[in-house]
Length: 216
Image (cartoon, rainbow, N blue to C red; front, side, top):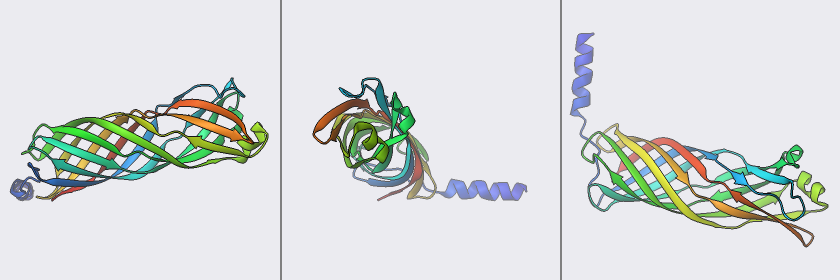
């Protein structure tokens, strides 16, 4: 048993760190859990006692990181996620009232605290642009508003912050843990035969992910 522990320790010690330095690229693939911290206003003017909420989602996420210096890097985060929108307040009994896809490319500037170590924590802050597409209403919403309803959500521009850590597996491959908070605010417009209602929605998700990356 002692020999086994000794050989394992020697093998780990022999692994060269997968740290990055100025000019290097990192590519990470994560599985992320998106948990909206949503806060929505009333549906105006037609349903002032009704509101909405946004469901969680689990999706893959791809990011590309370029090291400007040994400590400072820029990261572009790419993913798209489906979200069900549910009735709240006076229309909570309707359940799901619409669904949408969100495409939230996010660019952050990161600081890596220990670029030459096998465990490398970092923090980041930057900007997010979220585009909503493929919005659809449900039959329940159509019936409640008196006819087929076209749903549209405005694009969102906001800020983002993140924290994470890279942990070596080999000299090029590493594990990654990452958490982000993204400021996403939108206005949902409901068009029912030319009669318009709207609702302001702060989605503001926490995005937690785990994945694997490679240095190039």
